[in-house]
Length: 298
Image 1: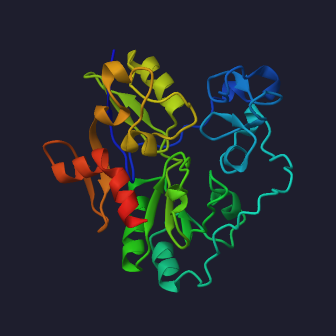
Image 2: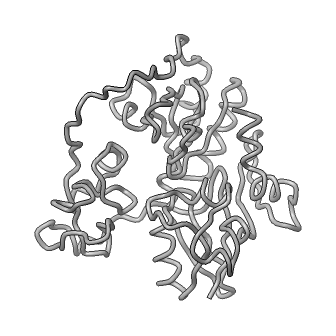
């Protein structure tokens, strides 16, 4: 049975749920057969073909995206394996020469927004691009846990003329997920992991959720399904707002066709719930023309 999805763009509802303590020992877990891990899956990534690190989102891998911030130590390793030095002659994007404006740092500090700057230890793996040929360096990476964090960060960026980029799964081939250029503010939605299904079959999904977790959760919660792609580790943010073609698309359409509402933070920091009947212009821009917005603003 098809479901409908309530939205994203800059944010959505939710907090990260910690793994079930009943599965705290790797020795009690089974090697993952499908790339899922941690939580209530009873799977570990240790010695799996997908990589030995279990990411905060419950997927096995071997890169910094899986082994870095939030890695589930009880479901595998959290150490990135050594990789050979790239032989590509492609020159990465130049690093910004100007320091981050002190006014931006002060603004974020006063509002207690969780931040990572280039001087922080975790910054290097948080800024890593999916497409390593297009590596950019953000001015700051925001790791919000609340809607207010997102709102405050957007206000600070607006006051300082900094481009804002939301990041859901971070799989942009053009590296838009790290700003698409140097000096952007990246708002990483990895902590927005809440998923609910109401009595009308409408799913409310956090902006940091991956397709695999969403598909499993909405089925477990309400025996529902959505049309979407087949890569379980892709984030819903870019996938749903840019199209989203999958096996069920001939029946239910693209992923974007199922968006019935979005919670959006505007440039002035205000938060609106956009649907076809309220804030309709925001709804249609956010759920139908995002690709055009990227091409014009990046």
